[in-house]
Image 1 (cartoon, rainbow, N blue to C red):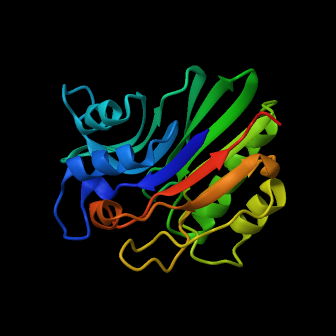
Image 2 (spheres, rainbow, N blue to C red):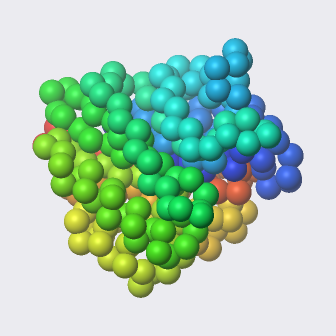
Length: 228
């Protein structure tokens, strides 16, 4: 199984041009079963919108996680899944006075293995992230799934920050290659945690000519074997 997380920056590339076709091309390169997307800007419910384009590019089901609406339309998270879903839960992780944030929780049964997948995009301030991380860990604790995956743009710039410490304590230490900025990655803002950790075969950046142009973040991709 292959999963990925990708902050698509409203489809605005490193050349400051909005080009959804480049994002679609990167998704085709990834060839993942599940992709968590952040900073998705589009018009929900309008035929041919961005998420429909991206879902068609992957031949995947689209799960919306809208967090706000402004003059440009709808905005937030999304998940594209080629795997059948057992349930979908949307969680509000917003902190008053800050940009609204959320998480998409999915239940999946793959080859008889129950999986919990949580896709999110955390806030910019440390206090926000601490609150939001505690909420994410509550979701983790209430699930009986055998495989649990948390992925998204965690926005944690501080390696010594409490959110990373808490997440590493629960999930174990995963590789954390830098994903931002795309042209010369310096910061590991985008993360994937998988439990149990021995299901993980590879975790790496997706670096291609297109992915360096399409967004200001690079995609992070994990391959796992859940048959253990």
